[in-house]
Structures are given as C-alpha cells and as structure tokens.
Length: 337
Length: 303
Image (cartoon, rainbow over all chains, first blue to last red):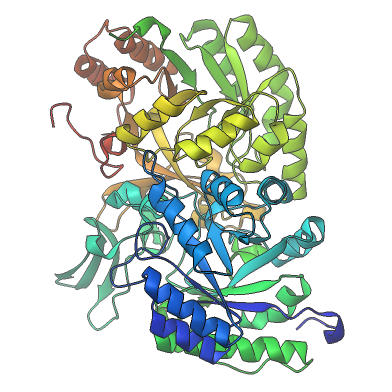
C-alpha cells in the first residue's frame, strides 16, 4: 500500500449502477454518492430485456436519491442511428427536464446537441467515447463544456496520475469493479461481427438472445451466434459466452487469447487510485441484481472511507460476485498489456 | 444513372507489421503500377512499430506523389502515452500533407485545416459528421459495421466525401493489450515484435476449428476478408464515390484493377469475385455488415 497523507486527499464519489428502481434504492441506501441509470431503449449501452427506467421511474428515482443527498446520472451512451436521432435527443431533453444531475454521452453529435440545447446540463463523457489522452479530453471540455470524463479501461494508474493535473478542472471517473472490456470501449465491433448487434449501434454486447448452451459427450459448449466460445466439463459451471472472454485457438495453442472470464476488482489499489487524483469511482453492473449492488457499494464505501481516514484497507471478499470467481486489476497495471 | 468515371479508390494504410524494406518496396510498386487514386501511409495499430519505417516515409511519399497519387498520412488509432501524443502532434503539424485522424484527439489537433476522418473514429450519424465537417473534415471513411441504409443517409447529409471499406480484413477492435504477444506468453513491453510473423494477421479459430477472427498485435480483425465487389453498383447508386481497399500480401495491383473494372461496369461482379478468390487463395469472403447482417456472413447478390 502506497504511503499517503490522508489530509491531502479528495474523497472520491462512488458512482453505482442501477438497472431497476429497486437497485437504485439499494445503491442509495448502501452509501452511493451517485447512481447511474439508462432509459428502457437502445439509447444506452445496457439495453437488456427487463432492465432500465421509464420516464416516470426515473422521476421517482431522482426524487428518492435527491431526498437522501445522492445524485442520478443518466447514460445515453450509444451512437444515435443516422436518420432518426430524435430518440436520443428526446432522451437528453427528458433527462434535463427531470433534473438528472448529469447525462453520460459518447457521440460527438449528441454531445453537440446537448451542449447547445441544454447549456445548464452537466455533461459527462462516457467510457464509450474512449477519450484516452489529454488532447481528446480537452477537445470535449473546450468545445462542449464536458465536466467529467469516464476513462477507457486502457490506462495504467501511473498514466491516470500524470493525466489528471493536465486536464483540471475536468474530472476523471474510473471503473473500480465489475465486468471489464478488454478492448478500448466504443471501438469494438466484435459483437456485431458475430451476432449483428453491437454496443455502439444496439447497446448490447454478446446478447443473450444469441447464446446457446449445447450438451456434448464431454460436457457443455457455450455458443454465441453459433460460434463456440468455450467448453466446460461435466459439473464445471458454464460461464456466459462473452466473446472476448472465450477460449480460442491461435498459433497452435488453445487459450483465453483476449482475457480470462474475470472481473475487475481494484479494492487493493484504492490508495493509488485516490492518490492519482481521480474524482469518481465507478462500479459496473446495471444488469446485476440488488444484492450485488449493495455488496459492492458497501465494500467500496468501507474501502474509500478507510483510505481517507488513514486506516488500512478492510479485508473484504468479493469472490462470490465476481465472474468465475476470478479477479484482475486489468489495465491499471502495465503488465496486463 | 451513376457516373462511374468519378468513383475513386483509396489504398488504406498497411495495418500489419511488414518489414520496412518490404513495405517500402510495396509502396514503390503501388506508385508505379497500381490504379488507385489515393494511398495512405502510416502506422495505425502500434506505436512500437513506427520507428523502423519512419526513415523511409519521405522517400515513399515522394515516389507516390510523383506517380500522381494523392498521399494521406494516417495517424495511430489508440493514443495513450506522451510519446504517442508527441508523434501525433508532429504528424498534425505537417502542414503540406493531408492527414487521416484515427482518434478524436488528432482531429482536434488538425482543425481547422482540412483532414480525413478514419474508420476508427465513430461516425454513426449526420450530427457527428456535421460536427467533424465544421472542424475541417473533407472526407470520412465510415466504420465497418454500418449497413447500406445508414451509409445512404450519411451520404445525403454529407458535405464531406464519404468513403466505404470494400476489401480486406476488417479492423474490428483496438486494445491496450497485445494479443500477438499474449499468444506467445509475452507481455507487450517485451513483445519481440512477434506480430511481424503474420503479415496478414494471425488466424483465431474457435475450439471446434471454425475460422473466426484474426489478430494483428493490439488490433482484432475479421477472419474473413471483406469483399464488396457485388455491392459496388448499389453503393454507387446511393452516391458513394470512394472505396477503400485494405492492403494484404495478395497482389494489390491486381486487386485494385479488379475493383476499378467493376466500378467502371467493365466486368461482371460475380466473375470479378471469382478472380479475387484466385488472388487471395486462402481467404474467405464476407459482406454481411453492408446488408445489415452479421459481419462474418456472405450474403449472395440475389438474397
């Protein structure tokens, strides 16, 4: 653990996912500073069946959060479809009207729209915009008044620490827990190559409608759109076939070529991330249930509070809620590359 | 009735790690023999590769320009380190050449000078296209996954020239992690430049030996080669006037000639496709995206 002068540190906000109104309440009750949500359509990157918010649910969710001192951020972070940007424009207009604390956007055209139409609305740059350097971040800040950038999961902690002083007063938000993209976000079409549906165009990656588990003599094969993504022996739990977390054959060798089925967990790195001057910590998982949200929020709330108080990190076991029970610190450590 | 004579061909940047001499000789032959209007030069995928070819760039650029080709210098796609940023600024500072921005940061550096938007910048709709035009974009090569219907909408609203990818393995994703190095149990920092062993990319198969993807260092590509010979006519009807061919080790002079002939209506697209298969004997073709389908599919012309 890095040496820290806890007096000099800014307390980062915890930004927590909510796929349903119940999860929003759980997150707020568990100590989230901010909750991020999406509308129930393809305007957001977790466009999954049974998930997300109607306008009325958002209004009620914002009221619940604001009464308890928490903020609500609305992710409108897919890329509007040419010829019918109205759905995305309406989403921005409605978020502004319902007094969302910010909108999280990825598309340049949509950001330009929001900036011109709602100058008072706080703009956050989605991870899907993959702004990975100071010039990109300044572009969004200077041209559109973007106040916070969710950094793509490609930078090391050292790079983030070097970046922050160069872009102030623009804030950075980083992912600290949950599923992780191994590709630069918003710059990956693997899902549509296999299934016809992508994060950028449809708000989905490796969508469930294309998933099949096929029984074989040796166990179970998981498939995505007919492509074998992994094979499991009898009695072995068959994981979800997310394309980039599958086993493939390359150079005569079978391996998890892109990434193992694993979850990001940075609890042990919290002191370094806080020291790097990050404003907000983001937890992935709008598709996850209330129990997940509550457990992760509580763990990171305790972790952040411990670091700020100069205490050692509490020993917390999040194995039960990580993908395949495996954890990584991802791109934050250079050796990952 | 479309005016065939005004359709242009772009040879995109070489995305693979070719040996510097081989790359130079490739461009010399393109300059002397290839019937293409525009040629891109520059490292898009991995900044570790660029120092080796950089000394040859001026010579290659002059040879191409002397042969009457428009030369475009392509930027890196994923810019993270100070060194990568510095190199991008140097590129953007070269005022007498046209530059292709493959990251938003480079577009910002180039503005208000005229520039090309590369296919690795997300242009999905007319709002984004209009904003990039206001910055100085005079041409935009569209992302791989867009269907013809969206391309048509963009062409209608565009002031900039719209370019569509038409041949070669599709760039599908970029990462900070090097999968070529990882396939050899190496880290990116000590990669030994193993990506040079696969001049058309490393095939990635599923566990039941189905060809699926290809890896080119930090880039993930389609296993299949895009082949839009059968769709060129339709795209010309929609108003697309520029098509991009991605360089491979196949005879690109011959590949370009085939596309030129089909664009001019001089050869039947199916016949040309059969010939293309002879030029790329191990390649499988795909055209699904343009039909609004899975990118790996090949949709027959009549389907």
